[in-house]
Length: 287
Image 1 (cartoon, rainbow, N blue to C red):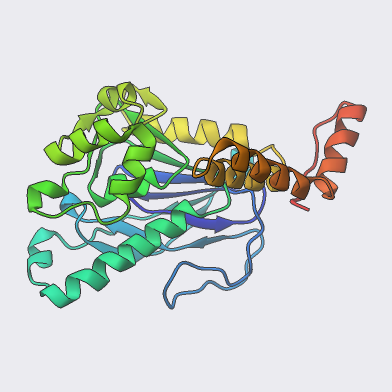
Image 2 (tube, one colour; image 1 turned 30 degrees about the vertical axis):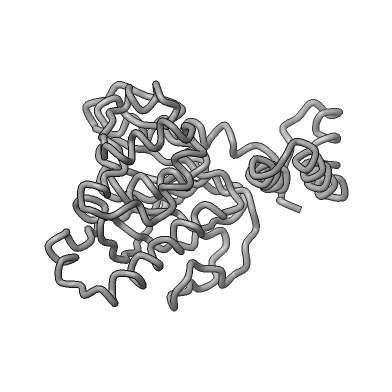
């Protein structure tokens, strides 16, 4: 998988790697030189999407960078699609690494996946094919996951006498529960879309279409539902949910209160009230 890293408010970003994609319904203003860890940084473009692509190799074991973009039409929600088609090295190349290289290599993958998890805008993983190992770990870092019924996904690292190193041992139990996560990791079991939906790993499962992009289309539909909402509200709602799930209820409610307070002084809140009064669509600016 790969990821859209950031975008201007009101934009919709996507990045494709093989048959797994991430759709970012971008609802936050980020700095003009914000980027994922590493040396690559984008120039200032407005509206724009800052991109860094990381694609899994066969078995989800290795990653490589790539960048590109294509602007679509105004009728497509002013969407900028980001296509990633490079493939990483396969497991044969991984064998060539010595022990001292493996740790830093996996740490970089973990850092990238953590950055995706910490993006302030909603993110949706669309799985139309394989998401194994690191591919599924990146999907788990997204807020929502959708898949075609024919898709295949799993944390298969124990087959290679290693464990998931990109957050899988932590995010899978949080998504589906500890006991079932242990079963899937211990067995290195691969699930199809229907099985993944049954255990709660994904939110939606679709029959695959002739184009092979059923999950991707569903992800875009969901993102279009998110886009009209207030950008600041979306950002702090995600923050409140993510942080609240890691603490007790009383502390979680305090987090919610603090996040709600961030929306009160915004221009968008006043615009929402005015639009409601005037019976029109609000024009949010993320301010």
